[in-house]
Image (cartoon, rainbow, N blue to C red; front, side, top):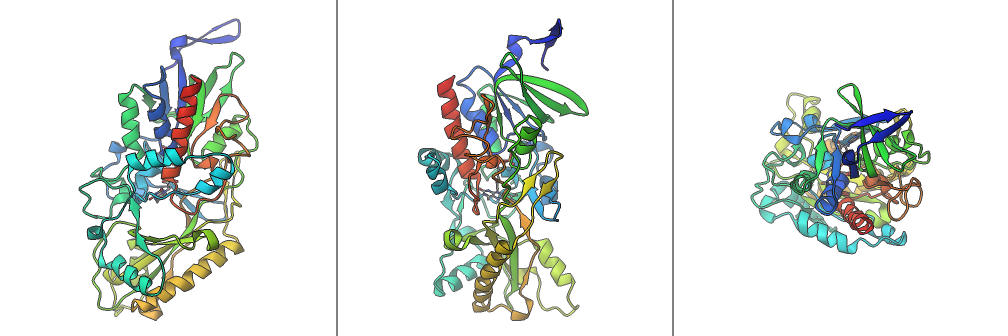
Length: 436
Ligand SMILES: Cc1cc2nc3c(=O)[nH]c(=O)nc-3n(C[C@H](O)[C@H](O)[C@H](O)COP(=O)(O)OP(=O)(O)OC[C@H]3O[C@@H](n4cnc5c(N)ncnc54)[C@H](O)[C@@H]3O)c2cc1C
């Protein structure tokens, strides 16, 4: 708890209550920064709106982990509000994105990417963990000239492919930001849970006051520098409330949908989500493909059919299409989010559908029952972009106020984001340490 006293209308904060760095959020960006800075600087405080993972851990239910923000136009955008952030519900895919676009902005993170991959892991999913479901697609698509391959994953030894990565991996065999957060705390960083950061105010004495709401009460924490890592839907909100008016536009979410089919006489076993991937269309056509299945969607489809419907979930194969969507979204100062699917997005989905349908048919799918799921969003990004809201050192126009999460992406990722955010945070950590 911070200690403030007032003399003649001026608030003074005792020196011991002023942190060198306050990091807001403990997801991909925040936990990495806390780890990079702790141990090297005197004091680091992490303010995390969510709870510690163990409070909800073990519940094998995705809905307990995911926080869905519905856009004004009806698109569900997924994220997670808890210690570890959205890395808790990730599929554990470890793929680089926007490396070229960052280089164009003069930002070379090649060294940090290698460092991050070394620590987090990016080994292609082991063949033993890929079930016949994805192996069927691997074989058929290869014969057709497509480039599916095992997905690079940040799994640790011992994973048996139970497929529950996106419910926090109760067995802790997937890298999450909690791994880095734990190290940060061992290095002396402090953390406050349930701390919903609302606003950041730079006072006349140069100290930042971070205004927090916790259990209905207002609190303040004080720091010399503040780094916002609250994710691309929340960071712009904090920036807007803090007087950074150009934040919040340019929102992309990597729109995605699944295409499903049923293969007669099959009995597919469980496998990790997104076991195999094809990124060959990413640059030219703006989409990627990965096998993935949302069992509840398939069950719903089966339930909507006649009683004699000949297939069950074990006959189904799903391929997820994820596109580099048009960054036409926006976060408004009242927290509302606008994000729609435009005609350009629909064209990408249509082109991907034709390819996936051909692969399914070649795999022997029943042509009558190939169906698509709703369109959702999974990777909010770009709302405090480099070159618009922050500079190459990720600093806003307010000296000492930084952003380091997917908000700073200067381009739509269209691919998994975590390893790139971790690398950006490592780069910023080095830069800040050199300044201190
Ligand atoms: C279902 C799903 C699967 C995914 N799978 C993958 C994958 O396999 N590989 C991959 O690379 N990417 C994956 N992603 C994307 C990736 O997880 C996110 O893009 C990434 O975690 C974003 O990092 P971030 O630092 O921007 O935000 P987050 O990781 O979301 O961290 C934000 C943090 O800020 C906290 N916070 C929010 N608001 C406040 C506030 N007001 N005050 C204080 N704290 C606050 C949150 O609780 C959270 O801890 C997936 C995303 C989803 C939804």
